[in-house]
Structures are given as structure tokens and as C-alpha cells.
Image 1 (tube, rainbow, N blue to C red):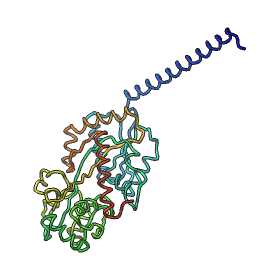
Image 2 (cartoon, rainbow, N blue to C red; image 1 turned 30 degrees about the vertical axis):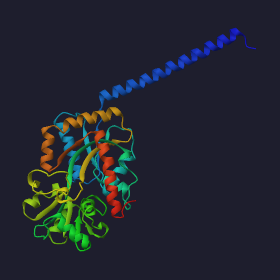
Image 3 (tube, rainbow, N blue to C red; image 1 turned 120 degrees about the horizontal axis):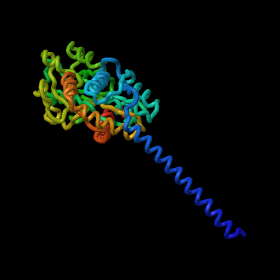
Image 4 (tube, helix red, strand yellow; image 1 turned 45 degrees about the vertical axis):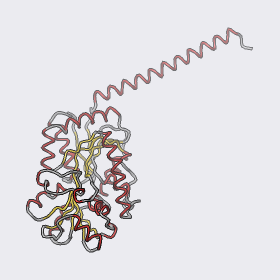
Length: 345
């Protein structure tokens, strides 16, 4: 039997070992905390790359480059920033490339738009990734959908258009600058469904971008166009088109002040075309905090206000928490439209 003296010795050794382990753990935890604190104080301390999942000159590319310029010009960010174009698959190629890299790297950012949600939900061309595989940082801009007809069209409002589409949905050709089930298509299908039209029977023709779709409309190769309102300004001024309705919650200003919203025309629908900034899925909290603070300040600068005015964009800023809640809501809305088109996965 172990003597009382030996038991005391073993007890002392165990206590000392436990204390040493505890101190080591505390030291390790303290060291980790200090490292995080140092990283937070120095971030960003390396060049930042922004993945824009579109070609050079496209809307996402323009937004990313405008953002980096304003951050630099205003001194809000002193670290160098580069924009990398990753086009293809309606933003799916750029998304896959971004997710395949280090999920903790705070120096990588991603700037997509609505197809991030659409591609994950639709049946064809489906992307396995969603916004939940990223860290939402901020919604930067917002635009709205518009339903457009040629200036000489017999349609003067949405109710008359949807009345004909309800009776004979295949009688008119709808044009858009994106593939079936994607952004432009949904801009028109949302109010059509709300108006009781069998959206699955509408003839939709996709073009390579909104510019080509607008040319088709004006050239008589389409009866109706679904597009973003910011892309209609010059054609509206020139008297070449008529905008029947816009998907905003309330009337817009300036050149679009006379255009009624979907809701004003008795159709309970609205649709926001956003562009936003994301980090990798496991982005450190200190980096998320940095971008919340920095982008909130950027959106208040006169330089950013000029960017919005020049491009016909609305200031749609939402911080990371607000943006995440909005994305969850839009995911439900997009899912409902795709189901009505029999295009949901």
C-alpha cells in the first residue's frame, strides 16, 4: 500500500503539472489574443485583391475600380488594391475561384451581384455555392429593374401589357441581357407572376448584355425589354423608348421621376439589383470590423456620391449585419420566382 508520504509526493507532482499546463494554456491563449490585437491594429498590412466576376468594363468591374479609387483618393485605405477580372458562368466562375482559396485570408475580397443568389437556386447552370460560403461585408449600390417598350408601342402602362400576356403569354417576345432564369428575366417575371400571367409560357430571348438587348428592342426584334433602370437613361432622353414601370419601392428622382413603380400600377412587387462586397467565409472579426467602419465612411464622401451620380446608381449601403439579413430575404423572393418558372433546382 502506498505510504501517506508517497501519496503526498504524487499529489504535489500532479498539482504542479496541472498548474504548469494551466499556465501554458493561459500563455498560449494570451499569445493568440496579442497576435489578434496586433493584426487588428495593423490591418490591412498587405496588398488587397478584389475578385470582380465579370469582364473588364462591366458593371462589377466598374464598381470595384471606383471603390478602390475613392478609398485611395480619400485616404481611407492606404494599402494598395488591385481588381482581378474573373468572368464566366454568370459570376459562377469567379465565385468558385474565390472559394477555392484560403477561407481565412482577410486580404481577398469578392464583389458580385444578384446572380450570386440566383445561380445557387436555379435548376440549370446551378452553382453549389451561396452567400453563406462567404462573409457579407456591405451592400454598396442598388439599382432597380425596368420594363421597357419601344416609343411607338401601343402599351402605355403595365396593366395593359400584362392583360395581353395573361390572355396570350406566347404572343409577345421579351428580351433581356442575361440568360433565362437570371437577373433580367426575373425583373419581368416577378411582376408578371404577381399579375397572374403564366410566366413559363412567355417567350424570352437572351442577349449578350443589356446593350444588345436594347438594340433588339429598338430594332423591332423584341416587343418588351427587361433591364436595369440605370441603363435606360440615354434612350429615354432620346425618345426611343418608354419605361412602363420600375421595381423600386418608391418613385426615383431626376430623369425617372415620371415612371411609376410596379406597386403604383397595382402590382405588389419590388426587386433590388444590388452590388456588394464580401470576404472569405472565415474572415477574422477584426477585418469585418475594419470594412464596416471604412465603407460606412466611404459612402458618405463627396467622391463616392459623384461615382453614384456619374453611373446612375443609388446609394444602397448596408453594413455586414443588415446586408446578411437582406440577402436572406432576397433568397426567398428569388426562389419563389424560379419556382413559378419551373426553374428552381
